[in-house]
Image (cartoon, rainbow over all chains, first blue to last red; front, side):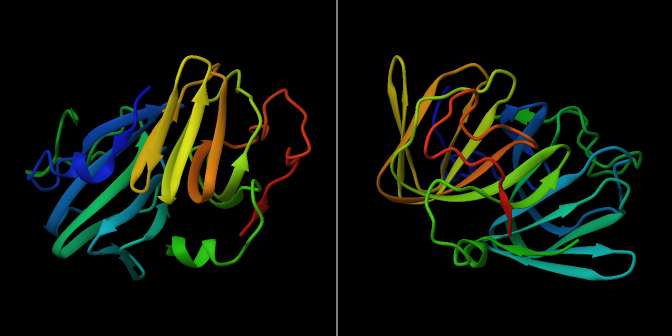
Length: 119
Length: 119
């Protein structure tokens, strides 16, 4: 059991679109990611995903709309909902999602991470 | 699906030790609470609990030590671990824990909330 400083953890990596695991509880992993640019359209068949924006402004495109999530805001993307995160400037996000989730669902892409690093 | 502004949600209530549900994903509830003073010793037999400190300094007493969790820090209290949160000054926390968790585990106390409000 340890106290985790979220800003300190963000200072440990610079790469984009590669979520790092900082904790686990009840089968869910808490991850941090830095993102910049456009991600790939994907969904998760069985998993909801919580996005919390720690720094910057995240846009998430859905097939029927786009949401803008600013610092201090969060959104839950339910399972089965296709989405595409976009960060026009660099954004720091916290993600909470089930352990073992595939980064880009059933989609394979150059940005797909096969195994998440732990911080 | 909606964007949730965490500070706005905190401005909707003033009572202490009464977590409010702001979202749900994968059987977990995301709650906000304002706390001040000492809580009651308790544990959860089957549920881990994530504390994220949004404002102030939270102390959590365990039987063998005390942790101090400052703004921007988090801690996961594993199932079965007795703990007692303490806020010397008012603290704003985000909690993530399984839906249906009993506020104070098997302990009954004046501070025990039987049903969580949704915001």
